[in-house]
Length: 591
Image (cartoon, rainbow, N blue to C red; front, side, top):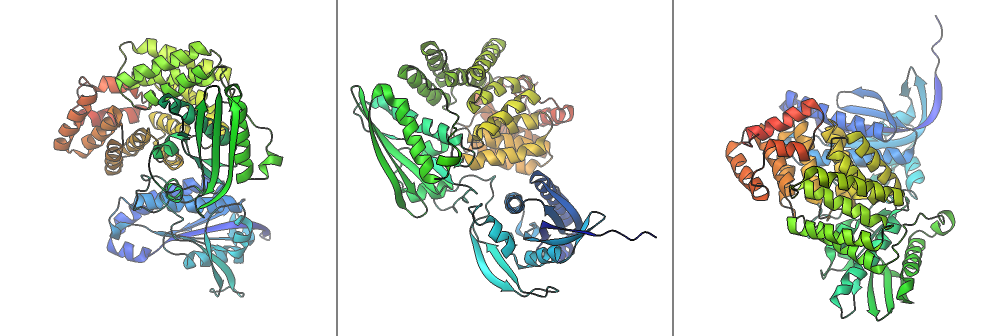
């Protein structure tokens, strides 16, 4: 008989199990096994997403290996975030709370299974973790301490069973693991966790001029800085819509950083007098509440885009100095030749975010004006594509095909003018989504994310097409990422409604209803949020509530039917389509 071959290697091991599993099984075996199966699917998916491999399972435990220590820790935090989010929907006595341990060590390999102290230490660290927490070995900590912005507490050498030497151990500081898929924290809420790389929010610059029309100019300067910063993959940049949500609020910078989950905040002002402009900007460490840098720029108005480049460069090299040496090759968005075109584009965006028929029509008019003033300004074409798409999506259009054809033409024009602009790709993706061409839409969203990983709208739109093409489970992480990147975005109702429908398509009707109602509480929530609520209520058989929800939907569109919903939410997967329409019919929506 041939001798069994055993090899060895150094690898990263993640061990997870459920706290109090025996007690839960004793109380209700079937419910516990059902929830465990659902949570295991989530954990397995996240392990695969972070390039890990499950090599052993038993009862409530999971053992996985990773080629990257960083990805193993990221996976552990993602698992706890998603489980925390799901547990929020369960009664306290039904929640499954996991503990996770991670170790880097030498292991033996036999027939794909891993053995030895490297595995055993990970399992012992899992036992040292707090419920819902993560505990890592000293070898893991040494490899991630300069790569991930996380708080770990040194709990010292630990004597653990069957391990000869004490194990150096660190626990993730409580409060670092939050549910990414929840509503942004309120005044009394816990702070969002800091990202694993330098995180920054650019507040709207104050208009110090006597002319109120210059507010668009001041906000545009800040938005250009956001756009340029977001192109650096080494930064976590909060989107314009969330950072601009603090406009006019008398809040300390430290509190803004807490609410947005960022370490650095940039604020500034613009004062324009005749053909001269003065821009001031300062960088603040919101965690330490200290000023790191401040500068003033006095320039002729014709030189404004050179000023924008100077400010962006100064901020980036202050936050992450080595970027000056390693990332000097910056992809820049070409600015328009005319400030009038730029101002028209900014005003068009403002109207677009109001989500009313009147404002959307004004948004189209301002975008058209920007395109006429500067035909080579890609963002204006992308903005026009979005405005035309929304006119159909929100039920404002009296000529669907004409608006959609124009939207696609403008989206293609934007991409042709600037293929490195993520906004252009997402604008084009919308015209494919509403025509049911989801694979193409997802490709453009993926391209946008590769250009700007912090672009929340790209993650949202990607998730939108995923559930409409029958991939609802895959849509949930995209929704969660969109909410984390831009928790105060005016389109948050759309992200929540999208998550609601994805959950409903997965048969998780109560969760779907909860997210639909969260969407309806957001500013400017409209028809699609009501449709999401109706679908969940229909499947739950709650006819009385469905009548109220249908009346609400008719306030947005008096003649709403399943046929109209089919046109604006073209679900191409037959089973998902049947389930979706069936829910609307059960809720009382006519065909």
